[in-house]
Length: 291
Image (cartoon, rainbow, N blue to C red):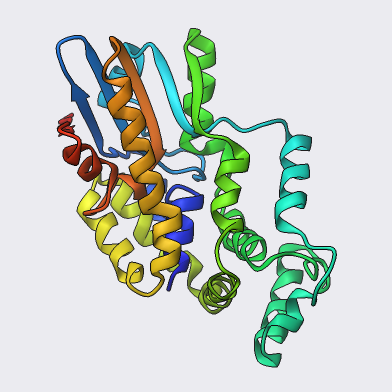
């Protein structure tokens, strides 16, 4: 289902499941370099269970050697983010969200909300994309995943502790805008697929993080490709468009000297439309770092 695209794009491959609790993980790492510039590319997981050991070995060596950290997004203060989500993801007029669904889909939607600790009417004024993202994240938290244990949180804390500059490739408004601009039929399809896939959330996450932990970019790509053809609008908006934009940024950054550690969702560094493929079109080669 397209839910894997949502997990990979929004949560940067949110999870690797029960296997990652096995302590040691060796996620994939690439480098793009010339005479005076080196850019490391690291695929992240935004939410992880405690105790996963990935910030060591080659990843830590590359991070320590870098002058700055670049993330998909530097999160704004919580109140600012909440206001932005309300602005873009809630609608004061028009039919309520359940009324945009079939009776069976509406019943399934309302039944899912109490499992998140919400009343059945809590998201009546939400746009379908917001409801889908909230429903996608909820099972991860129930399975023990948390943003505070995710790669971005660990990297940001380490960067601040060592005095490294931290910047984002996107603003929060830009990132949420990719969802908000999806045509309404695509948003509703995303929500319905998310509802259908909720019982399989644990299995989906397990497969995804198992591949991430093993540094298996091809495995991640295979999981993603199971869904890409089913939702071309979603795949283009959340993956392909952003990969092209980030490749342009990286190509421009290669013109200045220094060492940069770039950390984006692991799904963006997998497959034929991944950032590495976009860099190749711009004459830049991303080499896998063996560690």
